[in-house]
Structure formats: structure tokens, C-alpha cells
Image (cartoon, rainbow, N blue to C red; front, side, top):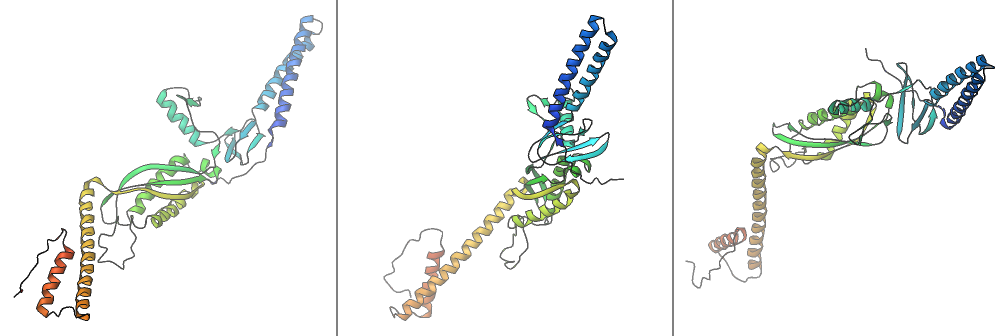
Length: 337
């Protein structure tokens, strides 16, 4: 059964004080050991000398263990500690501290990175550096981080295969939950991000291919409403990773395209739509110009045209204005009849 661990912030002792005490104690234990050796060598107080030697060794070990309780926490980092398998507390503020020397660090990301890297190169698991690359830290970072899982192929709501990719900006807000509630919070976020992007993308079409027929349609599309859809992804992912103590600050769609198998066909369709739209605009402009020309000729009585001549003039002007090529003028010096 899943056990919820409530974060408990601890306020440990200043580490410099205990460092001074530990160093003084170790020096004193060394002096006691040397004094015992001198007394044992003189054979006058052998028993007392042996007692000093044993006491010096014991004190040296004790103060050495005390120094193991010194911990360093950097800004925007947290240290989650356990004591003999039980949750001990979390240090959230930066500084140099002293805690129980028997506590241990807990950071599954650090431990998993070491295990995976050491298996690849075949070195001991207590090593921290592999091939010149420093692995994860024992402290849990509270900084804003970026996750980029690359691109993935999904089907939109119309069944068209598309390629989509997004970056996730996130941070740890509850290091205790991040450590104890999931096995590896970084890998957990990566898997949930892929699933969320796939599930949200399949709810929308890539683009509205019938824009003219649906001029008043406000349906969202992946290409036209990428910001709004990215916000939906953020809300969904934020809900999924809340149990791991993570906060999603932003999701941005970085890559969006049709898949290779249909990209050429969709490009031809988009080109056809663009040509049709351009032709419609040209025709609308040409009709307006023809109407304006006929009205101007009639208003200023430059020439009086009957219906047949108007039809001929309209035909000629539309051919000139709507043609893709330059027209060749023909001068008619006679009658059209």
C-alpha cells in the first residue's frame, strides 16, 4: 500500500562549529595516543599508557564519525535524509550544516544514473565520475529545468499521421515527494510528458482544410492554436506529476509537421487552396475594376456603349486582368460588326 510521506524541514546545527569541535577533538585524541605511547615505553605506567592509547584511538574514531555529519547544501537545492530506513527530514536552505552522522542521502536520480553508467563501463558503483563526466548529484535540484524528449509520430483527430515535439520547463517543488513517491522522478516526468503530448495531440486536427466552407468555425487546430493547445498540455501534465512533487511551468510545441508519407499530398492540397484563394481575389478585383471603368465611361459620356459593346468590353478586360501572362494588344480600326 502506498504510504504518503509528508515533508519535514529540519534546521540543523551550523557546520563550522562542529567542524571546529571535531578537529580539536581529533588533535586531542592524537596527543592522547602519543602521550600513552610515551608512558608505555617508559615501563613505569604501562597500564595507564595503554589506557591512554585505547582512549585516543576511540576518541579519534568518534570525532571522525562526527565529521561525517557535515553536509553542504547549495542554493536552489535540497537534501533529503533518511536514518536507518526511516525518513529523517529535508534541508531546504543553503549552507554548511551538521546533522546526525548516521543519516544518508536519498536521490533516486543520482543512484539510477550511477547504476546505469557503471553497468555500461563496468566500474564500481561507488564511483561518481565516468569517462570524465560527472553524474547526478546527491542533492535534489530545485532549479527550473528543461525536458526535450525529441519528436514522436501521432495521429491527429482526422487520422492523419503527424510529427510533433515539445519541450517541458519544470522544477521540483516538493523534494520529499519526488524522492519517495516515484522511483525516478526525471524518468517519470519524461514518460508522462510523452503520454500527455500524444493524448492531447490526437484530439485536434493538424489544420482546417476547409477554411472557406467553415469560415465561422472556431475549432482549434494544432497549427493555428498551438499556444492554447500547449496550455492544455501543461494543465494535463501538471495534474499527472503533482504526486511526484513536480511543477510544470510551461510547455512549448517546438516541432509540428505532417509525416513523410502524406507530407507531399498535403503540400499539394495546400498549394491548390492557395491558388484558388489567389484566383478568387484576382477575379473580385477584376470585376470591380471593370465595373468602375464602365461607370466612368457612362458618367463622363466619353463613349456610349450598347449592351453588346459592353459585353465585349467586359470580356476583353477580364481576359487582360485575370490572365497569368502579359496580353498582346490588338488595335481594331474598323467595326466589330
